[in-house]
Length: 404
Image (cartoon, rainbow, N blue to C red; front, side, top):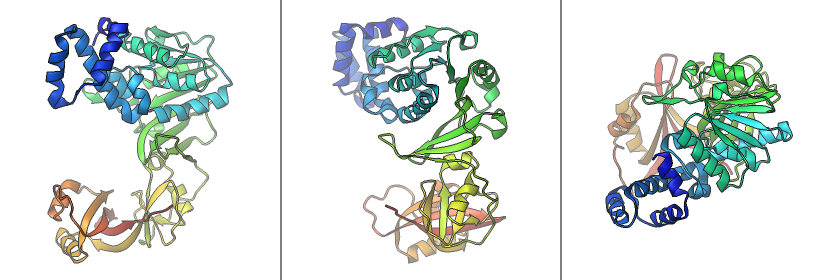
């Protein structure tokens, strides 16, 4: 889709076509027939643009919920955009600490964060290098009734004069896929941080896998997960930075989520101990933030292996920061023995988890007789955890602990 086609979609006739496409069958097996029918009455380029937009809106639902149906996207913009629940969480921090200061967003993409801050009452502007993406961001700001000018330009050359804070979202994708080295961000993280230091407060969105040594002095690193799935990380600087240095933030869901935050509080290095009655699997954000020790302290437990983030304890201590499993048995890892044990227990539904093991989960399931789809299969449910203690591979037969 080019700018001319996108602008045509914004006209009255383009909006009518979008509504028509939204009501049509745009699934893969029906797409050609739908496109052919629409091209009989509409410009083919406009039809292609409308089909692309409607299909992107459908893909955007997990990130943006009902708002996706009225937003505009590009494929690259959707892939890198911030999930609405995470953007809203971040906007609350901006609004709480900045008292209405204007925010300049460097590399605003399709405007997800800009919109979240605008809804939280913070005025702002955006800079975006790609002209089409900038136009999409402006359209989204208009959809939500926000006065948020979007300028086309190089974010590294933008002036920050007059702004109380900067938010930056450097590109972390290339034609070859995701970029993990902060020096390979576009623009590089060091360049973005130099700009961010020119204002009283800043936040820079980074990849969850950012090395801790890449976090600058004085910044606070935050890892965010939604319903147990790590979504992203951010660096808070200046007056937006807390004193914790690092934190794990958990959102229970995308809709009206509960929010839990864990920060370092001087927990001792977890002791290495034998398997207890319970296994705790820390949330991914907790692991990324190096806060497994804090979880071990919360549940009165330790680690079975000092290098593997599984906590074990004899106490059941429900916590949002880790999933709990009751350990029924601990066995040396052996496919033959496991197959016999699962058969003896009449296991019908098997979940396999692993950490610190090179085992191929899909192959292991097949070897244990649980490959493929077996609808209606009856029998007990069990969670098999494959890990190691030192160099010894072990298999834990467990059941999830359901807490209210």
